[in-house]
Length: 172
Image 1 (cartoon, rainbow, N blue to C red):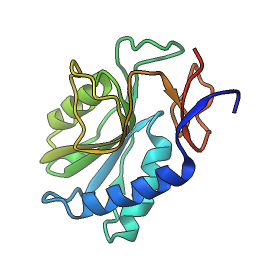
Image 2 (cartoon, one colour; image 1 turned 30 degrees about the horizontal axis):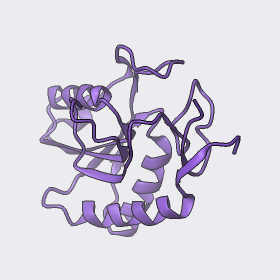
Image 3 (cartoon, helix red, strand yellow; image 1 turned 180 degrees about the vertical axis):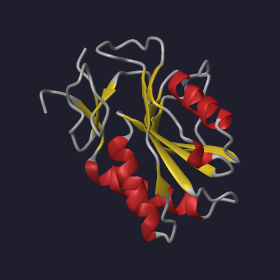
Image 4 (cartoon, rainbow, N blue to C red; image 1 turned 45 degrees about the horizontal axis):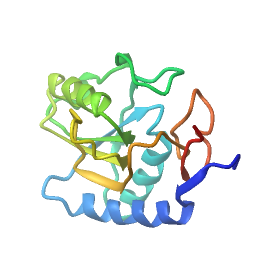
């Protein structure tokens, strides 16, 4: 573990993702297509998609690949590597990402999806840092955390620690 402080264990994540799946399946607007944001949201999205399927909500999946951190701990300009296709026009889209920090990635994703003609866009994140100055927001949140840089469960520090099964505070 390299001395990282675990914030949310693998067991806590599994229980919370299962509860989120129930919340999403019971929501007034049920999504019909999922759009995970690569790369940080892939682990969370995989778990949430399986949990929603167990709740009777099996979704089509289309990936959105945005990059904001690169190899730094400070977000920079958002670059789009793969964007939404015409398949989302008129659809109810559920965006999935690992962390909502300043919200720029989420805001960019929602903007791209709305511009592609989605009927609605909802956002689910593993961790919301709940910054008062965030420009994006989540409709469904597994956990909230402070402003520490976090790793694990798909989130990285310069490409390292994505595969950790838990979410931890990165060493400074």
